[in-house]
Amino acid sequence: MSNLQPHVLIVEDEPALVELLSYNLEKAGFQINVARDGDEALLAVQERKPDIVLLDWMLPYVSGIEICRRIRRNPDTRDLPIILLTARGEEDDRIRGLEAGADDYVVKPFSPSELVARVRAVLRRTRPAFDKDSLTYADITMDLTTHRVSRNGEPIDLGPTEFRLLRFMMEHPGRVFSREQLLDSVWGHDVYIEIRTVDVHIRRLRKAMNLPGTDDLIRTVRSAGYALDINAEVA
Ligand code: CA
Image: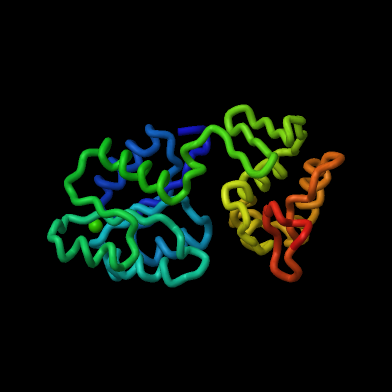
């Protein structure tokens, strides 16, 4: 796995298990955030969208399966990868878990290395960009280890924010993102930044990427946002 440090939200009320999971996932290069119940989990997801959620079925107040449904109902978090953790191993429960929208299902007790492997497998399946050392789209290549970007073989100089912005867009090519979504995903929820800051950085990114004789690859969608799109100019 490259230096992307995927962010895992652990939703579990048992301190010993939280500790075991945190220790092993951090050792495997993940960033960790912990929620002790469903409300905390939903708040955490709103505040900073994780790359994957490890969700215990048995939680105080609201069950993990209900939290899973709520995450799936919200358009902002519909695609969030979720692994359900549970002591139940019955086939019926497994089916219920998957029907509620979980991507995978791990039965307690599990070995930490098995769990880490399952997390990686779900990330690989749902976000192929996580397992790569480089990204390419059209004539752009981004090396995620050295942070070098080139277009048509010509190096492109990007500031750190433009780099993160382009990386996010290259991970989801063709998809239109609102300014709010870009702020949340690229800058994070915990910083206060004016929405038009996004426009400033998009402008810088365009200027850096649009070498002489190349097409504009960033599509501005009126009142909706921006997309990295090979057909930007004809759209
Ligand atoms: Ca529990």
